[in-house]
Structure formats: C-alpha cells, structure tokens
Image 1: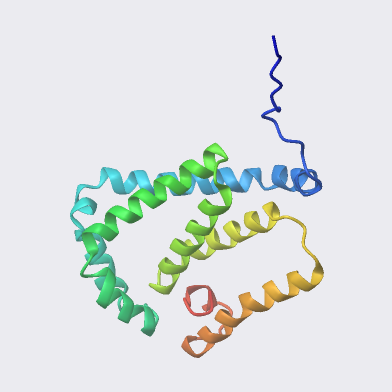
Image 2: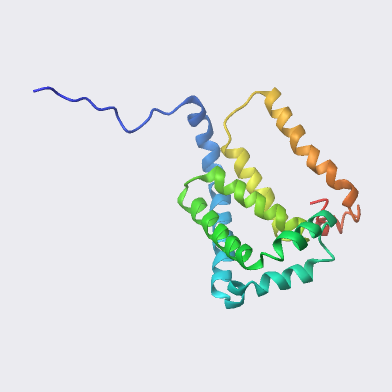
Length: 187
C-alpha cells in the first residue's frame, strides 16, 4: 500500500503576519466598536418599515439637500433618488454585512473599505456626524492591519490620499475651528 502524504492546511506565518499581530490586537477594540455601530445602524433600518419602501431615504435626501456638496447633490438627484428603494435595501445589506465581517474577523479589509465608501457618501451628503468619526476609525484599523511597506510606497499612498482632499477645498464653507466638524468638504 502506498501512503498518501498531504500538506498541512495550516500555512506558516509570514514575516508580515507576525509583524502585524500586535497591532491587530491593539485595533481589536476599535474593530468591535465599528462592528457594533454598523450592526446597530443596519438593525435599526431592518426594524423601520418605512425604510423598506424607500421613503426614509427620500426624506433624508430632501432634508440633506442644502448640506450636500454640489457634485454629490447632482449624483443624489440623478442616481440615488430615482433608485431609492434598491439603494435603501443595498444600504441595509451593506451595513449588516460590514458589521458581521468586522465582528467575525472575516474579509476585514473589504469590509473596512466598504465602510469607508459608505461613510464618505454619508459625509458628502452632509451627514458629517458621526460619519467622519467612523471614517477615521476605519482608516486607523486599515492602517493597523496593513502590511509593512517601504517609505517610498507610503509617501506615494499618502500623496494619493491628499489629492481628493485638495479637490474638495473649493467646497469648504468655513475655516472656523468650532464649525469645521460640520463642514462635509473639510471632513
């Protein structure tokens, strides 16, 4: 009889894995806080019957219209408003999926990037608080979970992050330190 050898299903940790383990442990409380926040937001919408008709999203768009950045207002009018019902469902599903992924420690980077996209959309729609807070936390967790890179790559990535920020400066409404937190362009 021949013996069949199988490879171990457990892969050996790489240098990058061992280097990020302590940081992953440090960002664990933030990851769990974000999971709870996303799950809470999703469950609130599941329990709200008017959310499932798209009415709440339509009302949100009307209420936030004056606070939206001009280019996002055009997007909201052309895309989100006509598709309010499927968009409402997509938001609920995304919020619950993000929360579950963060809670269960699965597909973390994908979930965090999806959270970043949703929070950027909420911020551009004028709902800065608490979206900016969650956005910062998601980016911190993403950085904490990232693999070590060279300084050259880090500077290139930082520069790429600054370009969209500079493009939003013309839409800034105030530079008053007490009011900056409410300005979607600056957040």
